[in-house]
Image 1 (cartoon, rainbow, N blue to C red):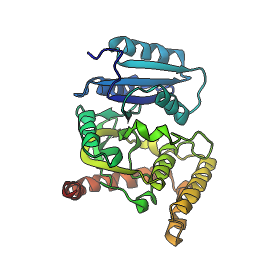
Image 2: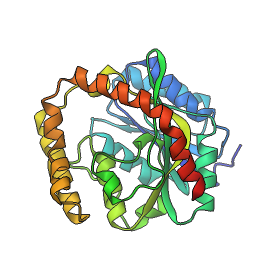
Image 3: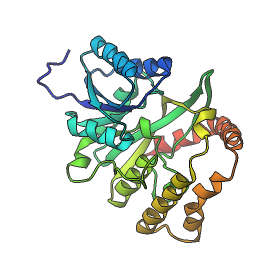
Length: 289
């Protein structure tokens, strides 16, 4: 094992707030501990969770000394949790992880090798298999090299799949902690990095199991939809995307608010089942670069 005085290559950052499903939490944590790439620290921020969650996290910490637990007395949100982890991180790269998803065993090895050999890329995500309580039901393919227009519909990166160079945040603010970015922290961050000239990429391999079930599409409160509209308007304007098409996408969150969540979920399942058939095209594009 690595000497504790040495800096790890990767700092894994994850925030947890009352993840009551112990099976999901165990799958998420163990998928990190079982990575083929072992030189990492695993920073877990407990964002004011119930005491029983704290006890469970402590049991995992005792399993592996790469786990570092950070605790908050009250719930402050994901942006605050991740910024706390970033401030404590010692690695060259930051790898995101969520408490109900699963990383494939070679995820870190592939992403680390990619960033080491592509210095022009600031952060890298990947494609993902979509899972629910019954297992894999579809796939999501992301653009290999997202451009400005890729941000119109939604973020072209699956947030918990991303590995970033920590050096980005030496001069740049990390996740913005505000009402406007609540539940859109990643979207705002990646649009901001794009505006600043940082290039991201998505490895055209399914290195992640992303949990999407009926609960994922429960309606957000109207105020969250309005906050996302403000976020889109401001960032699209600064990115030069506030044309007639861009304006349509600005109001997209509000339009989604009137559609029953069960219909959104059904449409997503149909789309991503079909999308998995087309993933070969993305792989071909990636291979040409």
